[in-house]
Amino acid sequence: MGSVKDLVVLKEPSEKPGLGRFIFSNRYSVFDYGEMPDKIEDKGRALCMVTAHFFEKLEEAGIATHYLGLVEGGKVRRFDEVENAVNEMEVKLVRVIKPKNGDYSIFKTLKGNFLVPLEIIYRNSIPEGSSLLRRIERGEAKPEDFGLTKIEAGMRLERPIVDFSTKLEDVDRYLSHPEAKEISGLSDGEFEALKELVVKVDEIITREVSKVGLINEDGKIEVALDDERNLIVVDAVGTPDECRFSFDGFEVSKELLRKYYRKTEWYGKVRELKGQEGWREAVGSPPPLPAEIREGVSNLYRAFCNEVTGRKFFDAPKLKEVVSQLKEVLE
Image (cartoon, rainbow, N blue to C red):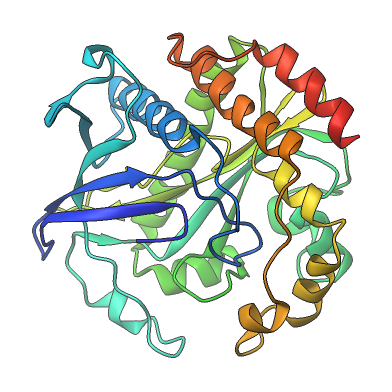
């Protein structure tokens, strides 16, 4: 299905939901490159369990999702019913319809059961290295677009900013709210409900991770319209791949891997060529991760899963110890 998850289709989706299973892998991807050369041990199982945990928390709050359960021993079970961490999840499937040559007009004709072609982003703070800062520097966005008079590194926001990017293009690009609404195929009311939904999801993630000392800096969700045009949360949610968390001021997310690669010659080629035709082949193979970083990030996923879900699925050090070890290696 993608660079980090596989999809088994049990029943094809149409205007009615299909049925499928996500297989969460140990692969990872950065900078839209695709599959990287290393595997992060236990990453797939950790992300699967965290996603299930959050999907069930969303359901408790009355938020609809496409989640049906975890697959253990060939049976579909709820989070509390599984004995061990698994990497397989059963979900309702919606149609994924890609725009042709940038033409999104088809989304205005669809009745339901399709992926909204947006990544919906919430921002609770503006950490160093935020893409929003770079967009403001380049004049692609301004604070007033988000109801603010200034946006600067290190800001904690009183209310979350809602931001949008494309989801189904070769390289994601950020969108203004009018652009996002235009390509989404949503009505005015549906688009407002979408913005309210991401804030509710943000609040639930923030509440859950704060219990173990994590700060929810920003994150993204994906949303679909079901066959009755109700908004539902899909894909994965609340993981270090979808969100940027911090612990004692240290990054707890996939951003750690991006930071490592930004110091390499390979990333220089990515910056130069990304978006051009055949850019992935042109930049060549990324260098492998050093063993201590690979193992440290693996432990980060394990510890995050143990502590956020409240179940010790993995034999891993405490999150505080993992963060301390990674600080020594990376800083």
